[in-house]
Image 1 (cartoon, one colour):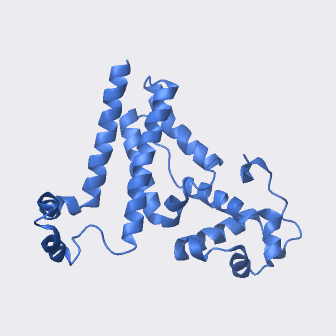
Image 2 (cartoon, rainbow, N blue to C red):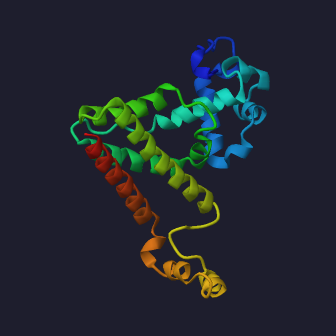
Length: 226
């Protein structure tokens, strides 16, 4: 297993314009947020920084290493929960924050699982999720599996939200919903009926319902185990 986090940053001395790992990551984040994953390359990034492409590799050995650094930087935007709240409130708040983070940085959620997430911010986020559960009496295994399940739900929901969101708003019915209904009304009447339910077009309600289901399932499962 190789990762940028297993090596120390090289010193910035002698590099053009005071080039540093931090400056490279900041510019890469700007490019990713404004233009997406497809527009990020070491050569284009070097041009944005006014530096020779090879000078970037002094600080960041590969593009994969750069992506690891960028992923972790975004994890740093998640604030830990209030230590005085119960585990369910803490985890609910962090799951909402994770969803909002994905919507602010669409490229970020698309790369989770593709690159290593073992930087200090990512690990700190995981630790902050585990702490209230461990304090509430969850075993290490129960807490870890619960956090993994919650995070998987949020990442999956947010990923679909981001991908479909590129094609327009998701919180209102598409203009051709009537044509769709005409196409399938006889064959799949229950699906067509569902499309006419206004509350199903609210992504916030959909997310809250799913989050409630996962949390309720965790509580029921842990009660059984106890």
